[in-house]
Every structure is written in C-alpha cells, then in structure tokens.
Length: 130
Image (cartoon, rainbow, N blue to C red; front, top):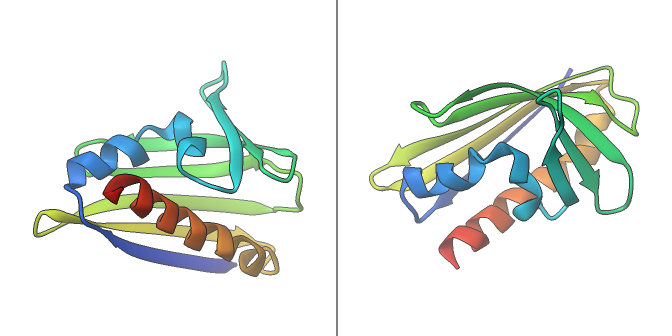
C-alpha cells in the first residue's frame, strides 16, 4: 500500500481553513485537479477531473469538532483497488496546519497521485491567504 502524507501551514485560523476543507462537496472550488464536484443522492461525492473522467467518493466521516474528515474512492477511471484518505486542520498558535494523508493500492498509483496533493494544498493556501 502506497502512503502519501502532505502537510502545509496556512496563515489563517483553523476555523477559517475548516470552513473550506470541511465543505466536502465543494472540493473543486480549491483543488486544481478537479473541474467540478457535487453531492450525489446517496451522499457520496462526485468529482470530475480536469483531464476528464469522474471519481465517486464515499465521505465516511466529517468531524467538525476535531476538524477532520475521511473519505474513500469507490469508483475511479484508473485502476484503484483500495483507497482511504483523511484531511485534518490543526491549530498552530492561531494559524493552521493542514495534513492530507492517503493510502492507496496498487502501490504504483501513489506516485501518480502525489502531485495532485502538492498542488491542492498550495492552491488551498493561496485561496485562504489571498
């Protein structure tokens, strides 16, 4: 299982950052790899990738008190056997530390996904810090 862990510091309060990260169905508003995202009738999230193709993700938990969410990819245009991801926003003396961890199989998928996480966290920081 490939494990990707990315962290970024954002000069905004954890509440401000969580308002964006915790708005799980609008991830395409800040993640450059996606052109659209929406809530499906079954509660899952559908994400349309910039290059084409859709992902369906089950949002397995959203913990507003601890500013933590978890999701899994259930349907993808690429060969993913298993996937689990978490995002967490932690207080860092008034600013925020965002950590995004993904575990995915097969292992070969990890390096292909890694740039998306780097770009996503930079875009989140730019959106929030302006």
